Image (tube, rainbow, N blue to C red; front, side):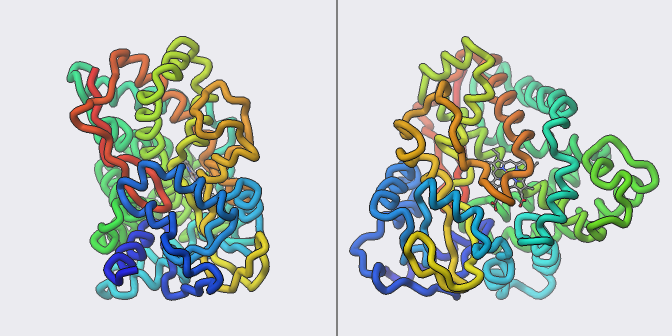
Length: 437
Ligand code: HEM
């Protein structure tokens, strides 16, 4: 592969959850493939037909070494499920991935970013993860749905009110982008005076962890400064909440648990991890959702005629085209997986969307079918790290998509300006989705 292309691919992978190029240890038996199909995933055109590329890789082998990504691609449903649960596949990725990528940054421009990311729930294993998860789960159980629903409904209507008479909109910029940030702001009970600062910080962090591929270096110092600001903000809030716990997420997390399992820095890290986990994933999924329904008018008609289908529709959407197509893990110790020799320090990419299109599990997986019988959807992960915000995410998708299509009944794709897909191995979304009504 030409050096320039390789550099681009490696840097591309550094966006958000990152890739440890320095640890590349190719499996010599498979590095001589003439044209690795996964190379296509790093082009805009390939990203459009990603499901076909996943299928080709999966059919060739459910577990294979990728010279392109210099890691293992795990693509079959059974194999992805087992990898998510495997104790030798670690989530502690910061020192192996993010830290080497940020080494060239100017001194003092990444210290907060690294310090807090290291403590994110997503980056922990074993007991440290279990303790954090137990603590964080208090704010995210299904019993919270009743209090979230009005926030989600109000956010949806406010955003649609602003565009309802315009006749056209960019679903990404005008709707999907601001949506999750506003919901999270409300969940955290951010006072009106702090909301502008909170949104700005939240966006800077989101664009580092899930933004366009080439922007990482510029985004890191901005995300770093945003984390420093939110650190000060959340510490101030914690002092208040300890004195008088409110009904918001922070209040729920700390009420009756002062001085318990997590120290203050850990608590702040989980607040920021929630901003990261719940922001770009939801934006991307909403944008994809609007596009998928507009491309499947018969499914859209069903959704409009039978609003009770909104919940299974949201689930099918995440299966069919999830906003998190891959998760990755680091191999802790040498072991064999899927008949392949995994070596300590290597990266394994868990193909979530590929698993969700495995015909051994989902019949006619390439069909978007909101009446489909529920199956073992991997779109929110599985095992210890299964999405903590899963109930909130489902509610957001259900309410936002249903309301969008009800309130704007003439919605159609703007043929003059086709949707632009973001191309990035680890996240899937749209740069823009122009629609008319
Ligand atoms: C459609 C939207 C969403 C998708 C597709 C999604 C997907 C995922 C996936 C695949 C994981 C597993 C990560 C792993 O195994 O390493 C995950 C974890 C997580 N998600 Fe989500 N997510 C979404 C929305 C949300 C929301 C709304 C929140 C909170 C506001 C959230 C918070 C989290 C957190 C904190 C974790 C880490 C859990 C842990 O490590 O134990 N997510 N999500």
